[in-house]
Image 1 (cartoon, rainbow, N blue to C red):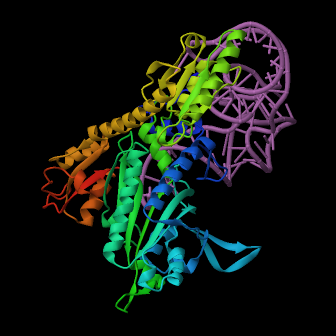
Image 2 (image 1 turned 90 degrees about the vertical axis):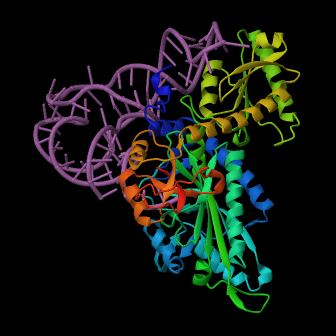
Image 3 (image 1 turned 30 degrees about the vertical axis):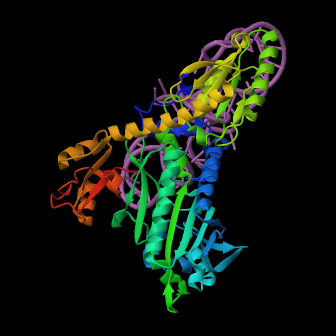
Length: 489
RNA sequence: CGGGGCGUAGCGUAGCCCGGUAGCGCGCCUGCUUCGGGAGCAGGAGGUCGCUGGUUCAAAUCCAGUCGCCCCGACCA
C-alpha cells in the first residue's frame, strides 16, 4: 500500500531499482565491512542451483573438483609479470598471524592460477599425466574501489577451472569448450542470451594469451561480462616450471587454461529478468518453482482449503517429471496474512508459478495457475494440475529467454554507423554496436575516453554481421575485425 | 582517491534554519473481527538521535573534528 513497499521503477533509476530489488527480495544484505555482502537464503538458493548445474556440466566434460588454499605466498603472485601487474593493486595481504609478523606475507587469493600451477608442477611429469582437468569452488577477494551487490564485492564466490595440456591447440580447444559450456548454461538455464567471442588485448586476463568471454545485455542496455575462459598459453607453465616429458622424450612446458563464473551471475539474472514488481527467476534456477497460496473466508472454509492445499502440495511434490526431477513446491500456509500480501511477497521473490486455491476453486475441482513472467492467470483441473504446471514451467523458461533475446536484438545496432551516431547511442539509450575496428589499441582507448564504451568481444562468427563492417569505428581505416562495442558493468 | 548524498526504533522518515517533553508511517507483540491482489479496530513493546570534543543552565538541533554507508566517476569478475 505504502510507496516504500514498491520498487523504484527501472525507467526512473535503474541502479536504485537494482539495489532495492536485491534487498527486498532478500537475495542479499550489506555486511558490516564496506563492499562485503551477506548472501541470504533466497539468493544463495539460486546460486546453489547454478552451482549444481554447472558442476554437472563440468563433470560431463571430464573435470574433477579439488580445493586449494585461500592463502598464497606473496612471492608466487609475482612470478608471472603480467599477472602481478594486473592483480597487485587489488590484493588483500596478510602480514600477521598468531600475533606475530609473518616472514613472508600471504596474499588472500584474488584468483588461484599461481598456487594451482605451483602444485601442477609437482604432479605432472609425463605426457601421460595430461590433460589435467580440474575445477574448484571457492571464494576470492579483490579489493575493489567501488562495489555493487553481487556485481562487484570485495569477496565473492565462484568456480575456477584450471587445466594443463600438451599442446597449444588442445588448450585452445579446452578454453573454447568451456566457453561453450558457459554459453549453454546462460542461455539454457539462466534464460540470458550471450554473445561470445575473444577479448581485445586491452581487455584480456592478466597473464593470458587469449581471453574468451560471454557478454550479456542488461535491461539498461549495458553489457555484463558473465563468464570468461582463458587460454593461458605457457605463461604460467614457464613461471612455475610446469613441465612434462613428451612421447618423443623432450621436456616441454604445459599449456594451461583457466575459466570462471561467479555469484555475479545472480546479479546478471536480476538485471536480465527483473521487472518493476520484483525478481523473475527462470524456473530451472528457482529454488521454489511453485508456491501454493490457499484462500479462505470462513473458519469452515479454512479447514477444507488448507486440507486440500496440503494434499495438492503432497501430490505435486510426488509428481514424476522427466526433467529436471521433482517439482519444487512450497505451500504458504501462514495464518494472519491475506492472500494479496502473499502474492506481492512471492512476486518480489520471483517465484515463477503461483497456484491459488480457494473455496470457489475447490467447488469446481480446480486451482488457478498464475505465471510470474506475464502474470497471466489460468484455471486448471486438480486432476491434471501437475502436468499443466510442469508444462507451464517449461513455457515460462522458454518465454523468458525469447523475451531477453528480443530485447537484446532491439537494442543492438549493425551496419554503417558514423562516430557521431555511435556517440549518440552510447550517451543516450545505450546498447550493443557491431562496428569495425582497425585493431589498434589507440582507437580502442580513444573510444573509451570519448564514450566510456569498450570492445566487449570480437564476436564469434555466428554473431557477426552478414556484411562485415568495412572501416574502423574510430579512425576510419580499413577494419581488421568486427567488434562489439558497449558500455559495461 | 575526486564529486554528491545520508547517518534519529527492525525499515522508511519528521524534527535541525529559530537549542527546552524525541514524533509519524510500515513492521513487531496481544486480543477480536478478517482473508479471491499489500485487512480493520483496540491495546502494547521498542530510542546512548553514528562517534568524540566544544559552546550553553540546557544540544538530535549550534561549532569543530572524526567514523561509516550509499550514489556518480577513475579501477575491475
